[in-house]
Length: 422
Ligand code: NIG
Ligand code: FE
Image (cartoon, rainbow, N blue to C red; front, side, top):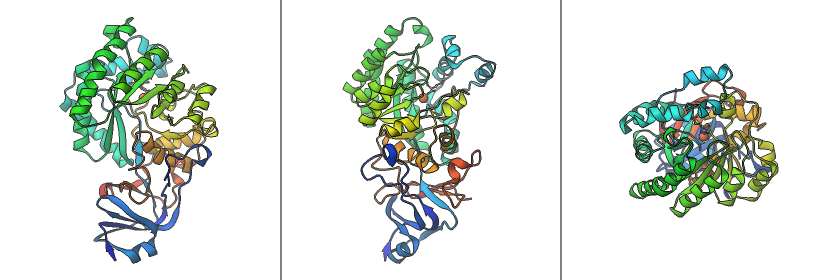
């Protein structure tokens, strides 16, 4: 008998989600590696073994046993695209949008991202931490065990660095592992109105080096992201920002094709970005590029839903092209204040026509690869971190099918129960 720290036994289904060679690409998406009456052995925060409960309990003993009888078990959700941390809300803009104003019209009139920037610029690191901790707690209760978090509401060097400091503090203060992304090119701040080029130059000359110095000081790798969009940063500006960032050691991400397909996805693939995100209005040649490259397509179906728009990420075309698809919330106060990966899965099933199994892999294994952590998290394979969800249902297919109810009963992070267990 080998002694481990924790045994989970008798799960109706264990969704292992095998991915030994990377993300599940193209038509392969949706392999859950289901084990009936399954169990998991955990030691030192990692998965030691996964398999049939009877076989597992004949090899392993643990002082802590969780009987998951009648419950499905999955990896913790990985949310690879959020805009946490921010301050304030935009409920009044939502009211305007219901009355017919578009997101880009509100932004062009000085609202939108700039209204959150005004609130966030005034905030101290302590304010940002206090306001965003409960948000992360709700995400954890809904099953997110890792998340990417971005700057982009500072848009001036000091305020962008305060957002990074807040992310670093939030990392220490709660269980969700946070992967930081630097996004000074999220919008053109009001004081640069009509001078986009001057702002791009500020990003390149001052902000990116400042973020790189922060990354070095905090021994934390940083991603760099750009909002490549009509009326925001065009493809050429995005290219200049991202190539500078790559030279400074950042790994790359792009907000592409959210409203207009400009070529941002093709650029992401060309520059070897780890992900291209949104991809609603993606041109066919950019979809083909995703199939040929390693850049992961991150679908954010909460965003068109949040904006009450009709078009969603063309997941089926991306899969047919051989692309790797992940899902994320895009959690932000403008387009999509959604803290639940379960809601995202429900939307992806309906509007991106993913099966529950495909959506689950996109929200775990593939999402982990979209933040460069596919070797450590995102599946229940031995050797990986023990980030595990026990569901309130025997059949994982209730994820996606049901919505609006939290189906996560217990959240385990690095082998420790951190939420739920009602
Ligand atoms: O991903 N499109 C750019 N950024 C966000 C929205 C941010 C905001 O409106 O505050 C997005 O949709
Ligand atoms: Fe976003």
